[in-house]
Length: 328
Image (cartoon, rainbow, N blue to C red; front, side, top):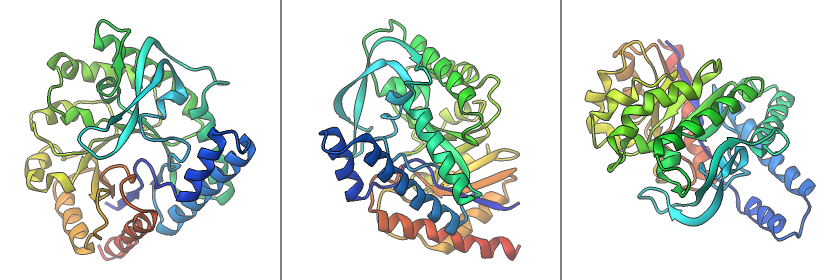
């Protein structure tokens, strides 16, 4: 079994990109200049992915403020509301205010799809071998982080969101190689039981007849180990676990690993301290012995919390895993 390497979620925006986006929003530059600078950043990220030999990469989400912001690019029904704290982090997102039925935007309006199509062209121009992933919030997380003013039953909100993602996934089938679903809310407290119990059915709706790979990302500490039953019942290809936040609970999590494909978030995206390659190798070998059918290693959550220069160093640590593979 060969370990695979991946970038999960966003890549830090450098200060210049932040200024360019602000200039565009204020009308100081046109869309052509904005697109040019975004594409330059995507190209730079893809060159890094090639250097590190990542098996999977996102396009960095440079166009979007956060992982929830991407939904304004592909679905209608929600308006941008106030800034809210992203779970218990010192990170804020623009809350969707749901005022109408959730639907997939038309191709002409779908900026999310257009963004990925542009990234795909850059990937092909560079002959990058890394597989490209689209990043979306999961239906439970989208519901939890939204201000619902339309749906009487939150299950209906999640079903409509899942249906929109299903249609989006069909359109993405020739653009990306995988869909990366961020579902940290699955381990949150105060989640209603019926929402959790319906989640496998909702995921089935979301990915019915979707042929591209599905990578499910969770982060934060697993406070309720019973939720693992629900997590590992979802119809996805890879199951992601935040190793950093759950080192003392991995023994319990390991029981779900045999014959499954697993993603391990082992690079800490919440602080600048560099990981020891020996720790990464130890966890890798430990998981390998649990009988997983495939393994991906990368960052444990979004890379919005630390500087770009540190992120580059952390990703380059993964290059050292090639020596581990070659010595097996």
